[in-house]
Length: 449
Image (cartoon, rainbow, N blue to C red; front, side, top):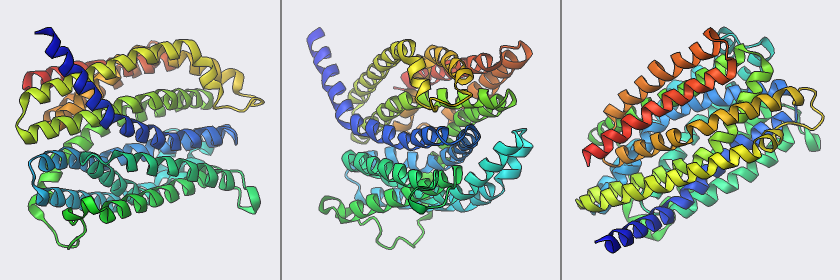
């Protein structure tokens, strides 16, 4: 009996990797957009680094709420395609785009008023001023960014992951080039600092969307979905179903990213250097997290396909393979943190930066704490992906909200300020929130299947 189980596991592991590795690469490339911003702003000024990182965090919080509609498209398209329902594929994708555009329009005023918001949250005046300028520009990239996410979900659910990877990689190079011109004012372009990074981000989102859309509507094997035929016509039934699945996903993502945003705000209370160290450590941990996110997306598609075929055994075995692969990478990440923490933090600062000696030890300490939550962080995102595959999103939303805001945030504040552990205490609160979420979400999925 043992040989067939092992063969089945290995086959499922290969399937997860074939589907997931391009998605991992895409997420890593997408995140490298933020990493390159952080590195290049760090080589500009510490103020622009802190403001840009804070602004990017605010953008990401709003973006993840709207991204729920794109995330809903992925399992819905995977299930419909596996069942041979081309009309359903088209309907849910188009209404995902509709909802994403509507969300971007509603959110835009928040970006335009962000300077006053950052000041009200207690940030240093220069950081609030520069961060507000960054957000007032980057907010115009929200609509193309969200629609691009819908297209990525659509293409990934149909197994077209390579184009998602290459389009995102191309965006990284565009971002680096425009950053070089506009952050530092090279080749006669205006020297804009963090605002230049914001302009680059908007351009990248537009280019990525155009590439993905052209591919999706011109590829012969996808033309039968007729994605944009009568696009302007509302489909209220499909819109309600995408909203019912996607809004809880967005709120669950908001609960998680909101926790990290709140931690950035609390770090800002501890000073500019602490916020910069937090931003650098968070960039590093989030880069490794992209691997788990890609594997989670692959798990969503595999589970969604198995659900569409009514194959419960394949659903379980595919889920198990994805979980084991994610846990294995988490273990490897812990060793990387322990060995290379100082070198990784140092990459984000100029060699002659006067604040370098103060920021690096803070960043290294935070990475040591980050090693504690590798299994928890990988576990919660994988469980979320599995639950989305079976289109279970409402109860996971509640679990996420409780875990992050009733466990993680109060513990972080208590340890950081009431007990005086400062940045380490805030990050230990993150560990507690993520661990609670991971355990509760996995229990729910495995009981369900």
